[in-house]
Every structure is written in structure tokens, then in C-alpha cells.
Image (cartoon, rainbow, N blue to C red; front, top):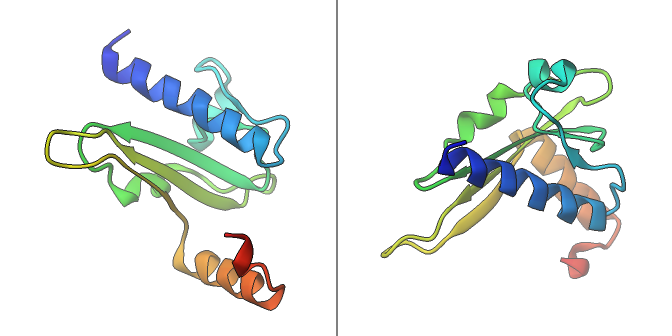
Length: 119
């Protein structure tokens, strides 16, 4: 296995662990031979309703990674977690990408339910 693949798989496992701590007890990295997740572009299972694609690159991963995920009835909300490795002149960076309408709806819900102070 190449170092970049190993780095990607490690990131998927780390992300699954963080999602379990965030209330998704079944979050786990799916294995390549599990065709339904792979066909739909999901890197993680057990994250319903979020269809998650994870990218950990040396350079800036493209936001188009979100397009690699196919929404389904069980996983209708596409999410991409993008991480850039720290380099000599660039700090590491990790972001979560959702479609703008989903992000705006999340902001509205946080505001409407007075949850902004929880961030």
C-alpha cells in the first residue's frame, strides 16, 4: 500500500472515531470490498443521513470531492471532509464541505435554536 493510500485510510479511521464521539456510534471506515458504499462513493458507513467522502492530501484537496458521493434514500446529505497536510510554509487545514443550501439551513437551525454559543 502506498503512503498516500495509508494516509487516506488513517484519516478515514480517525474521522470515524471523531464521528462516533459526536453521536454516530456505528461510524466506521468501510472496506473496499463492500460494494454498496464504494459504488455510492461513501468512505464511511453508519453516518446516516450523511454520505461522507474524506480526502487527506499533501496539497489542497478539491471541493469537487463532494461530487464523488451519490446521495441515496438512506444517505441523502452529501458531505466532504477535506484535510491538507502541514507543509513547510502552509499550516495544515481541515474543512467540512456541504452544499450551500444545506450549510445555510444548518446555520438557520443553529440560530433558531440558540445553539451558536455551543460552537
